Length: 306
Image 1: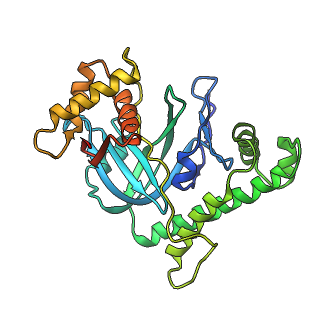
Image 2 (image 1 turned 135 degrees about the vertical axis):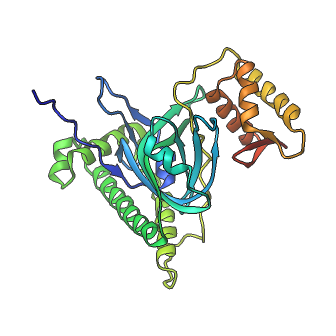
Image 3 (image 1 turned 180 degrees about the vertical axis):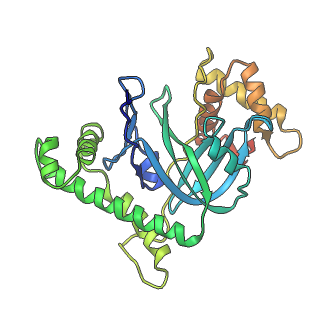
């Protein structure tokens, strides 16, 4: 008897700011059913294709069982990726990639919502490859076009009160597009600030067409969105409160910064675990301390107290 095959999910093209500001997760209700992350512009994402400059990578595992963490910079922010033994093709490729270089990665999105309500997004690549500038430019063009299309669809949907999926399909959307749009409006409210996405498209076009004066009325460059952290799956939670964990981490940073470079991430993680702080909690607390201006990252391998 032939088993019924589940069709492979589309790999969406999105810029980092749209992905990293997504907070709505639609969890699978049955085994082997996909989960989705819905962006503010209505992309209903299970898999993504991202591209940009890999600026840093670090092995937070061991030589025998590596766990690569890396950042990929696009035209306005950063994607955060985690690659481990469950992504064998990407794991093998990561060993040979030396940043900085252009890369493209396709994989599934993962989200983690902290106790304070913040959502952190990472990508688990199935494949990651080095690319040339021409290939990166193709991704920029496709992603700018798809972002523009979602903005146009969103504007049309907002103008149709009480629209349902069949109504949007009649307007020309696919069922997935229609569902994503309605999920986004129900969760995020009204039409998102289009200026955020127009700035990103402007930056992409300026890179693609340096000889043209592409000007949507925004200044050169855009501010990066808040740095999101990549979360290790399956880690549990400790019994310490946030305030206690912040104090513990600050004390460990002082103790482990023996040469002025900061505390090595791998040693900090081991010491924090012995204090009952999981890797997920350590990343969350590190991000909170950076938001407070108490610590910073000299690079991915170190965390340093200010």
